[in-house]
Length: 202
Image 1 (cartoon, rainbow, N blue to C red):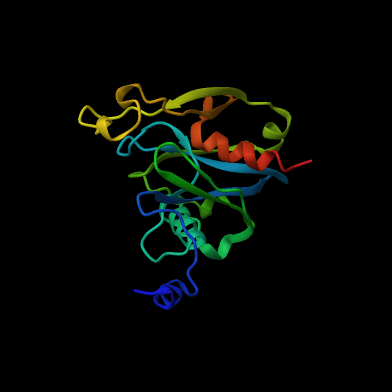
Image 2 (cartoon, rainbow, N blue to C red; image 1 turned 45 degrees about the horizontal axis):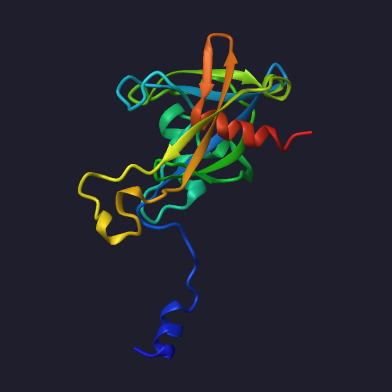
């Protein structure tokens, strides 16, 4: 192989995250209740991982599926809101996690929202609730840092790296946020998405 082969191989190549990362598309659905903007949240079904936790509509992006299309599909599958009712406002800042996830959030508006638009998939969602946007604007979340460190397995080839088992591994941290709304705790990835959205508002 020479340089021309490499040029041809990489012509038009678009950079992307590596294959071992799982891609998720998440919707931040705004809607009006009594002429005030609210955000729709879900509570995860007992049939899912992390049951009982608050989340936003969304899920894993399937092979060859566009990011936004995946989020819209999940919104309809989980709570029954069809794509005709959804207006895309913007793609929000995306971020990675220490858990090999990449999260792509989208801000959307549910047009002319009515309760009759909803049809919950109880295999995935046990209930939904709405939080006024003003709550997040006026409420500062609790903020914590969680240390993240490398923990190699027992069979790790320490003999191949300088200082072996005494190698000075880098350490990092992961920010977590908590919003407490009435009897609901909004935290983790869901709170991080909301916090990053709210930071952009005046």
